Amino acid sequence: MLISEVGPRDGLQSVTEDLVFMFEAMGVPTGIDIEKRIAARAPLLAGLPGEPVYGMTPQAGLPKGFVQGALHG
Image (tube, rainbow, N blue to C red; front, side):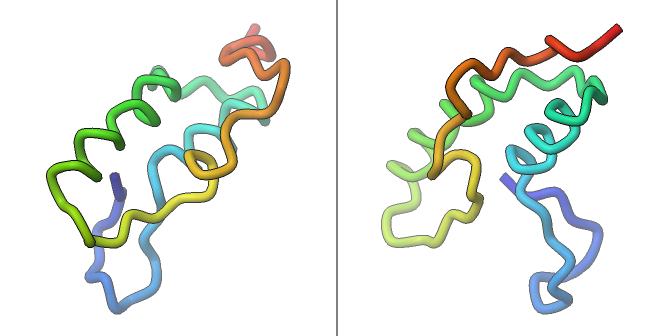
């Protein structure tokens, strides 16, 4: 689940879920359902056993009380 316009060795890849959480936590709407993005990792992991899948937000989980879109408007 990476957003990138450069190769993997360039070190500029970002995990979509981490970016969505960061923007939403700052009050910037993304239009991306973060819970669905995190849930989409399960079939990805099942289909690619042994492949590394990155991201801190899916591993840590969303903070207690986090409501996507709560800071918008």
